[in-house]
Length: 557
Image 1 (spheres, rainbow, N blue to C red):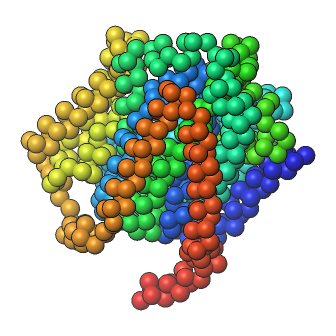
Image 2 (cartoon, rainbow, N blue to C red; image 1 turned 45 degrees about the vertical axis):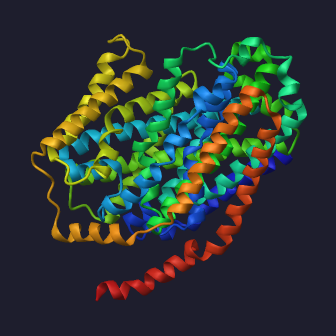
C-alpha cells in the first residue's frame, strides 16, 4: 500500500499540474509551446534535467549497459560525453540571440534560414526523432508495469499514455515544464536514496566483487577501442542538435538564466549518471540467471527485489517520472512539428495562434497512440534510442550549430546540401548497404556534412539578408545579454572533476566516491526546492493571468 500510494500520488500531482496551467497555456501559441519565455532558473533547470535524463538512461543507457559491459559502462558508455555537452551553454546564448521572434522549433529555425524544402525535410526528420524518443519511454513503462504487476506490455503502455497525454494536451509546455520540475525532484531524491540503500545493502564493490566474473572488470568490455570512441562522440555530440534542448532555451526568462540552467543541469547529470550503472552491477552479481535471459529484467530485479517497501515505490515513481517527463516533451514537439512546421510553414502561413494550438492538441494524442506501435517493435530501449539519435544527428548535427556559430552571413544554398550529405553518406556507408557499422557510418556522415557546410559558406553564394530591424535586434542582444564567465568556467571544472571521478572510481573499485555522489545528488534536489520557493511567484498561474490582463490594454494602444 505504501508503494502504490507513492506511485498514485506522483501521477495525481502531474494531472493536477496539467489542469492548473490550462488557462495560462491557452493565451497564445507562444504560451502553449514556449511558456512565453518566462521560466525562472529553478523550473528551467528541473525541466532540462528531467527531459534529457529519461527511463532510457536509467534502464538502457546505464543499467543494461552495466550488465552487458561491466565497468566499461563508466568510461565507454558514459565517459566524456558530459564534457562534450557542457559547452552547449554557448549554443543556448546563440539561440536566444539568433532565433527571431515567432520561431520556436528547429525545423522552424531551418525554414527561416534555408527555405521551404530544407525546412520541410527537417520537419520530417524531427517528427520521426520525436516519435522514436517518445516510443522509448513507452517501452520502458510497459516493461516496468509488466515486471511489477504482470500486465502485458501493451496494457502498461496504454495506461501510461492516457495519463501523460492528458496533461500534455491540456496545458502544453506549461504542463510539461512544471511536471518536469516536480519529476526532476522525484528522480533525484528517489534514485539517490534507492541506489544508496542498495549500495549499502550489498557492501559496495567489495560485496559484489566475488560474485562477478573477471571479464566484468575488463576496461574494454570486450569491445574494440574504435567502437567506444564512436559511442562517445555519437552520444556526446548528439545533443547539439536535439530539438527538445532548443525548445528549453527559448523558454528561459533571459540569456543568463538559460546559460546557468544548462551549466547546473550538466552537473546534476554527471551526479545522476554515477547512480544508474550500479544497479546493473548488482543485477548481474545477484541475479545471474535472470541476466542470462534478459539484461533488462536483471536491472529491474536489482531494484524491485532488493529494495524494501517505500523505497521500492519511490523508485517506481522515479522511473515513471523519468519516462513521463521525456515522453511528454517529445510528444508535444512531435505534434508541433505537424502544426507549426508542416501546417503553418508549408501549407497555411496565415494560420492563427488559436488554430495552431488546436491542431497541436488534436495531434498530441493521435501521434501518441500511433507511436505505441513503434514502441512494441524493438527488443531493447537502447536499440530504439540509438536509432533515433542516428536519424537526427546525421542530418542536423552540423547544420544547426553551424548556423548559430558561423561568423558572418550563412549562404542560403548551404542548408539542403549539408543536410543531405550527412544523411546519404550515413545510409550508404553503413550496413547493410555499406561496409561500416552504424557508429562509424554516422561519423562519416558528419564529416561529409561538415565539409559541405564549410565549402558552401566560404564560397558565400546568396548570403541570407535580414531585415534592418532584425539586424538591430541581434546587435542589441549580443551586447546586452551578458553572463558571469567565472560561474560558467567553474561549472566546467566541476563537470571535468566529477567525470574523472566516476571513470577512475569504477576502475579502482572505490566505493566511497559513489556514496558521496549520491548524497550530493539528493542535496541538489533540496537546493532546487529552496530556489523554487523564492521564484514561485514568477510561475504562479494567477500571477501570469493577472499580468496578461494588465498587459492587454497596453498592447491595444
